[in-house]
Length: 437
Figure 1 (cartoon, rainbow, N blue to C red):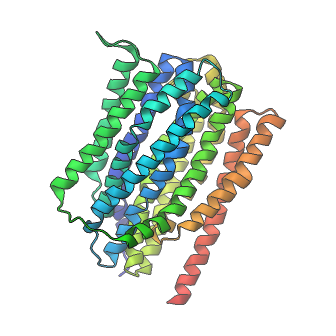
Figure 2 (figure 1 turned 90 degrees about the horizontal axis):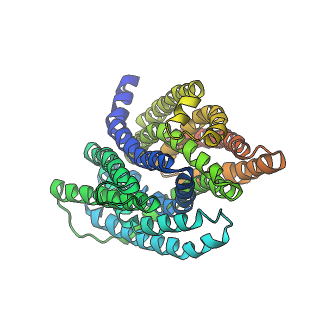
Figure 3 (figure 1 turned 90 degrees about the vertical axis):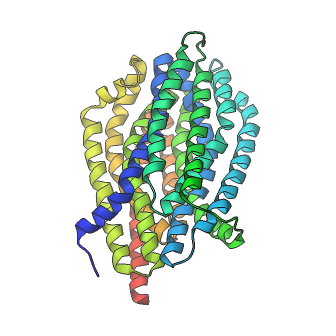
């Protein structure tokens, strides 16, 4: 029986609100790093900006694969299949990915010397990358267990842990970066150690919670791994395509001057904070649409898709108004550097428009994850970001001397194209589904 709109909003928010808390907590951990690094020095901020831009491009691939867990298990639950038995396979999968990612980052470290960054930044970049690389197991453990619990719509405690970790991270950063009592000022190394400790805390907290909450059997099912790869690989590559597009700007412009890398990290931190809300709603869409898809309930599937998309776009409209109304204040929260302010503030106006289309595309991505049509997201991301955004942004940045602003015009145009592709593919899928009934 069809329900009213309030019902679907409530159902989505029941899942999304705790995830919003957790997502905000997760990004505020990164924002805390940016805040403390910016207060320490612009060079420190530039170094961690370049380092995280590189490591994110590698680590995101595994996180994308792990993100297949909740939509896949949600579909199993909708089909009345057992899902708890996939706990240990999920852990094994995530730890193998973590090991492979760790090796990849360690192998990349010697390449830093040849990328022509400012010489004063290179040692700090390598130190930060080396230490944080070994926190990959903690980060992937947290991601895997959180996805598993999300499939059962258990979202409050996992996201509470993330939120608590914000304060743990800031406290450790202040003590280790600036020094306290017998603890000396460690600068970049302090930021890396804080990230290491916090990621393992988050992972083990959720692991202990799971063992107290549920009983698991040691199940082996190779089909589960194949399904995760089938759904997760397109998601992973799609996220990787988008992440590299954003982070390569910091790498390219960081070779021109470290202050551009710092500006890119600062602006991306702010947009990611607001992005966490539609991302949480997108996760809720994927779970609810996945359950409806498994149960062949097209009415609920369509309602969750429409209501969830509307919620994402409305929030990002409000976010765009805030970004365009208070750019100086928002940038000033992170830095007092006049040059960094001069570069970052104009980008905020482009970012405000970008927000709206970014909210739409992440909502549509949630729908496609729910119906297990993740290749569409991959293709759309690749076309928008790599065939349009990066070439256009590079041309505007260097041929027309717009520097980092040119890349953001490219990102804005890519977001518009991305939404257009995904909307057209979604309408086509809905038509096919209805004709098959």
